[in-house]
Image (tube, rainbow, N blue to C red; front, side):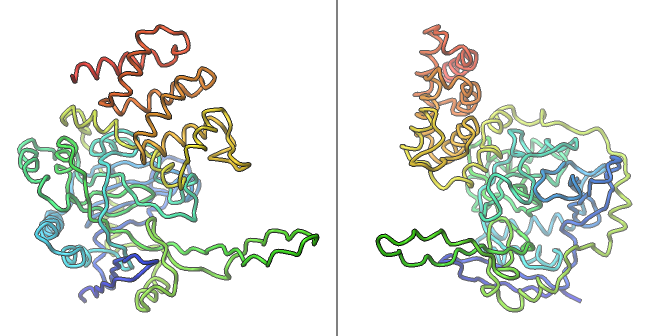
Length: 458
C-alpha cells in the first residue's frame, strides 16, 4: 500500500505554517525506543534510536527513565558505517529539487513516503554546524556523552515558549569526508537556496540527512547553513488562562486581589519545538491522525535494527582531518547557553543593563533575569551576544572595567573572545595588556591572547 501524503498550509496568528501528514509511510526514517539497550547497567536509562532504513544511526540515552527535562547522552551507534545507498540517493535528489526551485511540499515529497506515520511541520531555518558546545558536529559524537541542549523540555526557556532547533547531529561517519567532494561543494554553496535537509530528533538538535560536505564549505566560506527542516508534531500541551481582570474598585473600597491563573480542562493543542497549534487550527484529518496515532512507533524492521546494535565499530575518525579554520570558527559560534538565553528573555533595556552593572538584579521592583547575580550576568551576556553585538561589547567592557564585578570577569572575557575582529574589544584588551593594572588580573591572559590573534590577522 502506497503512502497517503497530504500537505496543508494553516494560518497561525497571522503566520503561515506548512504541515504534511503521512499515513501508511514506509517508516524508514525516524526514532524509536530500544528499552535499556545501552548496556550501562543503569536501569533508569532508556535508549532511543534514530534510524535510517535498517541501520541504527544515532544512539540517544535518556537518563532518569526518559525525563524530558534532562539532557541526553548522544553518539553514533556502534558499528554504524553508513546507510542504504538507495535512501541516500533519494534524499540527494530532494535537495537538488529544492535548489532547482521546488517548494518544500514538492521537493521533499520522496522523503515524506519514507517517514513514520504522523504530522510534521516543514520550514527553512539557519543551523550552526556544531554540537551546540563549540565542537564541529561531524566528528563530535564518536563517544557517548551528555550533550547540552538535547532535553525536550528546556528548563531555561520554559514549556510555554517555542524555539527553533539549530544544532546538528551527523548521519555520515567522518571517514566519509573527501577533499575532492569538498572542492566541489565550495563552488556550489554560495549559489544554493538550501544547503541541507534535517530531521529534528531532540531539543535543539536535528539529524543532518544531507549536506555534510556542504556544511564544511559553508563554515569555511562564511555562508549561512540554511536547512529544510522536518519536525514531527507529537506533544500535547495545555495553555494557562488568566481570567479577565475585574473593574477597578471605587475609591476607598478594598483593593481587588489578582485573578488566579487557571488551566483549560484537557489539552489545548499539539506542538513541536517551533510551533504550538491549537486543536481548532488543525485540518480535521491531520488532527485525527495525531489523536488516533501511536504514541510510540516501532518500524516493522525493528528487530533488524536492534540486531545491529551489537556490531563492533572500527576506530572512530576525529574532527582533526577537517580544515583547521572550520574547527576554529565552530568554537566561536553561538552555543546552547546563548541560544537558550535568547529564547528565554524577550528583551533587556539599557536601564536594566545599568542595574546589573550596579550589582542589582531588580529594576522597578521586578527581577530582571534571575535572583542570582552571576546567573543574571551570564544570561544577559548570552542574550546580547546572540541578538545585539554592539550592546554586548559595551556591556562586556563595562563589566570588565568594574573590579566589584570581578567574579564574572573570567566568564565575560572568554565569551567576548569569539569576536576576534572587533576593533573596540581590541582597543580595550590592548589597554589591559599595556596598563598592568591589578584589577585586570583575571582577564590578563585572555587579553594577551585576543591582542595577539587580532594583530596576526592584521
